[in-house]
Length: 439
Image 1 (cartoon, rainbow, N blue to C red):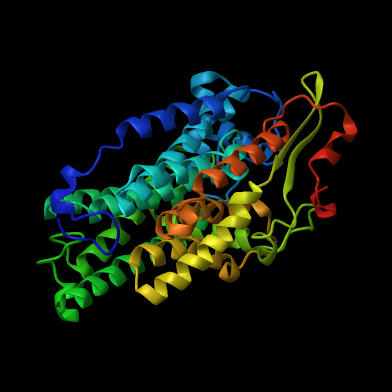
Image 2: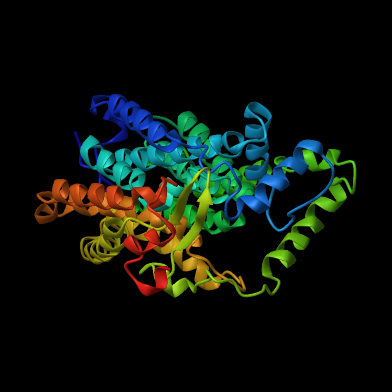
């Protein structure tokens, strides 16, 4: 049994690894139950549901283009919920709970494939489940939860391809990952840079494998004799990643071809993307909850999605990350990056790189206004970095249970304003606004 520099053991003996299915099933049941409990409260639209639910209704009627600054997939999924459960809060939010559960399970899968051990995979998944960002987005009809689910599932599929026993399985899993990443972009454009990050990670790991085995760069680019992604040459793999993701993205525009007003055609599909870009980058009026990208890691300005009297009680929904995960995760990213460079460890660098890639893109994206919920993907990446750091550093490993306990306590403290529970009165927000900028 050979050591694998990316963590775990060789894919050729992967059947000897302990099976994670029971842990994954338990996580799925726990996540879905937690996300679904009292999901229909509030029964009114809150925050950006006021944009996306009406857009989903318009999609159901095929009336014509609306909310054109975003692609269609997430709104199509919300529309599917309305079709199944009615135009109610259950219909608006049901599929968001499934996206949240898929996100938790994909964190588990990514860590399992990276490390080959159940304990850190469970820890990372629990960090995601108890992170307020994931919990709140799993209970609202917005785009980000679907984007995050498809991104994390896509990355898990690409790692699954890395562990494939032969070339055929590697290619099938790689194509699956490419399609899922394309669907992530079809939910929200912010996922697009992650495809480039995945491609870069693939190339770098191939080069690292060749360095470790004394093979040439030419050998790294070709298909034969590789531990990771067997039977896949670099150039065809990158072409398939791009082509499959673009094809999946374009396929989600199919309903637009049947609009009764201004239907899309093959000739207008590409120009429509420019219209979307123009809407994405147009100047916008200031918003009381806007914030700069530099402030998101320290959570200067979380967002009240709801704070008013609704359904017979004072209620609030605050998009706020779990303080232990968000701030402890930054320490984990720094530790993984430092140790990864020093030890030339691909798994440590990958754990840090996932956060860096998902966050740094906001420095470059030409958005005129920013919000804390743009930090959604990086907040998930922190859960991966934390689990990898606890697994790698012996001193930290002895404290992982205590850290999880802190995460659970903080989740419980903020649960009333994560879940729209009844609050004592209009001034109750003061219990949870620990900083003056959180009001």
